[in-house]
Length: 375
Image 1 (tube, one colour):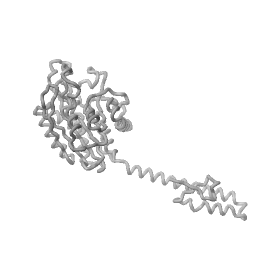
Image 2 (cartoon, rainbow, N blue to C red):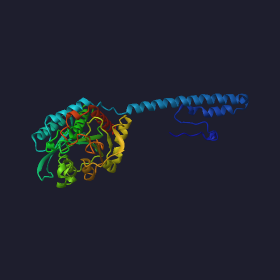
Image 3 (spheres, rainbow, N blue to C red):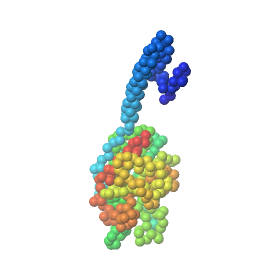
Image 4 (cartoon, one colour):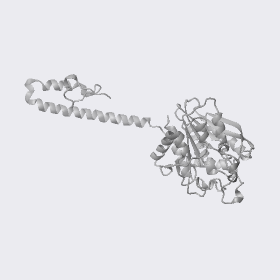
């Protein structure tokens, strides 16, 4: 807003004149009346009274304008839908009901079919990206990435992702007899998917702005890396096979997104999500956006500003190969028995008993707010 002074009052800087307000009529008249010779005895008093009137008028106008601007801001504020912890928990439980979602198993195939049908009821479009993946044992598996798209024609796009397969080995279980037993992967896998399925339900119930497109991706074969006792059998390239494939061959030719958020192990009680190292390296501005949102919502005990460890996860190929800045919200605990992740990582005890509804709620609320306020 620009202010200016009438030309004959340029040496009287106390009197500001705004052309579209009621004050504009008065200053010249005051000056004229105060300059009349036969009103000299009253000049000072008249001038002061007029000044008081103008200041009052300006103040009233400013207050009205401020109230109007505040109302306008309130009206423009994005309505964010209410995230349901119970719904997210039920989506986690449903995944576990199929059994361990190990590639090549009946449970894996049945769960994939359920994903396609359920996400198809929420999204505008669902893609099932079939691919072949050679794991560290040299065995080849049929993988399936599930991609659910909302507002598919929108140019501005956000990826929300998690891996849906479960570890074929409980190779960090305290009982060595369990080291070749598949795990449920309740927190490591199903928790992130459960949160994203609830967000998909919200996107159907309360559509996001048409200017923003959301792609929810469930990556397969993230967790088929070398057994802990056979780490020399392969390198890091045997992890995150589904996201590697998608990053090289996205579901749509020429696909691009503004940014992405990966969820991994987001369901345990007392979870703490530090600023994961690679997220800071590749997508610091996304990390800042999400962490600032979480902390403004009062969730700073979950979303810590502490620097995190570098984690080889699905966000790595998305950043390095696809060139899309993606962060990883992942539970890290350097005081656990495994020294990196939550206590029951890659053990038989990574089951539904480890899922805390409050943690699902916190992560779900933060991610939901970020995407709805992105328009």
